[in-house]
Image 1 (cartoon, rainbow, N blue to C red):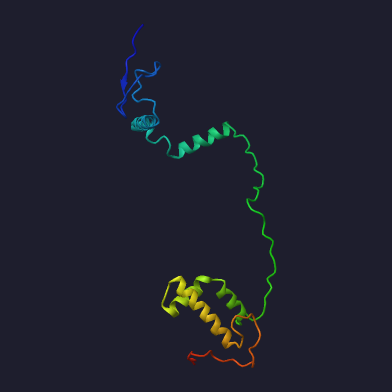
Image 2: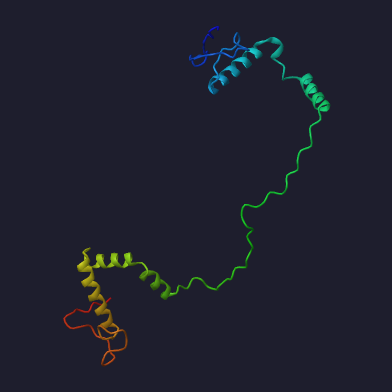
Length: 178
């Protein structure tokens, strides 16, 4: 049996066995990059010929292409249906205008402030100058007792006025004014 010779690829320089039907003309192996290089080389070779340089240009080529399409009718294109929406349609709703929006509800601001414990902790640590948990807890208790005293509540109760209904600052503290 005759031994098949291997050829060297003109693009990647690897050895390959050419197709027996085109072994005299085949210069590239079958990997995709080499096939692209082979196609580009054959197109360059074809365009180098004088009769092929203006093959795709000029009014006679336009007439040639028009005549081809008259002789070879295209099949009718399938009409596409209306594309389906990827999302649901948005139903427009009337907006309710609620009057003057410049007035801010103080209760809403307080709720927003109290819902953010990091803000409260930051304020307390800034006022006291300490970031230790034990000291912050002592200061919170002290601030709470002082606030109840200012509001006229008995310290440690949930509501109501003190004995005389008047607010006073606790003994041993200095009242600070504006």
